Length: 223
Length: 75
Image (tube, each protein chain N blue to C red):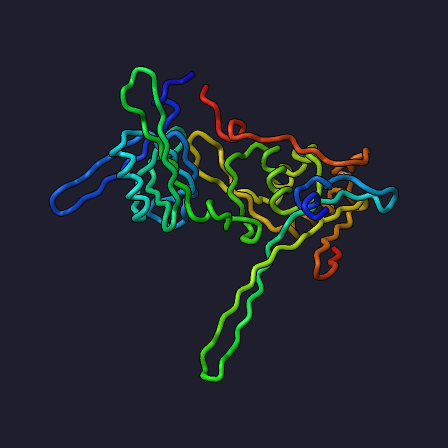
């Protein structure tokens, strides 16, 4: 397993007032965000997961509530200014480590859009925490209600590439992706696929069982 | 039956020949919005949310169909 400094990113928070400047730097074990098109370089954060001391985590929690901005960097993510924006939700927990008197505190912040599911079928774009083709196909079929079988994941991945229906997303500890399209579009692809024979129709009659997906499958495991 | 359908328990491959298809059920939230203008000129906005079933079918020949409580839609 790689050391934490190779797997984790950093979340930095700087707050300046007239008299004092507060600077907090925490380990960031998971992050999902989207780059904003307009300069300067900044991103809309959808999920942050940080670990630290009690005071630090409380400060980050308060900063999220106030809509403050942070700096994020990590493996594969160049330093970028991020914000969870208004109505973000926070969840706190403790991690007891052997040999430490005090537990570490863990904070997960989720943007309003991700928490409420407003980035869903109606918006024409979906943010998924993993770009694994099986997970993407299963998620799209479930969210949009597309009839299909798990074996069509490769075909759907090829269609997404052909139609350039994917967008990049920033990720630490995971490999998120943005899928663009509507139910009508996806059904058109499927219709054409069946008509042309690119998609084989299942020969057996009966219910369709999709393989279960756990958080361990979605979030990259430490190597 | 409705719960079984929208839970995905009845998603599957059905029928024979030209009628052979895959069905996928889901629960969809609909929001009705309407406005009422009162005699004093004030306006009352109404939003009513309700859930309904939707089943999407895809046939062997590529034809797709979305069935809801409102109307049939052929594609």
